[in-house]
Image 1 (tube, one colour):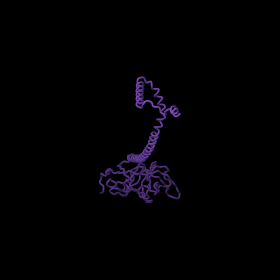
Image 2 (cartoon, helix red, strand yellow):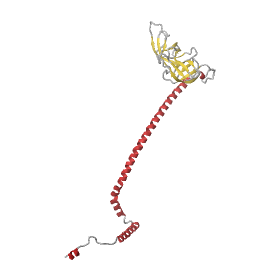
Image 3 (cartoon, one colour):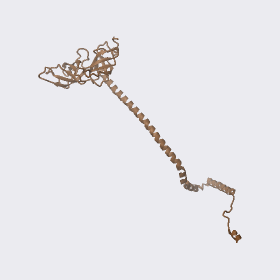
Image 4 (tube, helix red, strand yellow):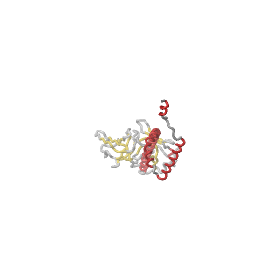
Length: 293
């Protein structure tokens, strides 16, 4: 019985061809397939089908590398954007500063053009001076200029701007000079009404926007809006240069004189450059005439 049972049992693993033989067969089969594909391309559909089957596997294998590259690009792009943003902000601030400087230069150029144009209205020599200081005393209207006797500046010399008479030099040092504005209470300027030639004297009213004409009779022909110009009397100021415009005329029968106020034509509080005026032919803006040491 044992022999019958052993005779009926079959081995679990049947021995087949050897591994070397199988490898040789596969190699020959591969060479045959490559040769057939190279000559006739008949295996192209098979290759396409195999590529379609393994494409999901390729995608899954490549997914970690693609995700890592995407994250790296994202962080790199963010850092790059932050750096670019900082750089652009710095450039923006620098450009804004340059633009403000250019705007200031443009305004200054416009002021100088107006000064040069106004110098053509007077017979004499002129030179541009810069205001370097302003007297802060509320009862005085004085300024300091950056030109002095070495530039030909002298006491009593008139000061102009592009719109009207500004003041008069009261003290000249070698390199600087002090000037009294026409709105100072101690300053007086001979003027006349451009409309009819009526002469008077304009005194500083104290505030920067006020001139007083206290010696005009009640029956004097003067009106609001009349333009006051320098009369040229005394020889200090150029004649017919704007001084101010009448803004108020008050008549009181009990008083011998009218109360007349005018607003200066010059910009008393906003000038940075002014014109120095020389009326004598022997004195020029370069200081070629004899000057005090």
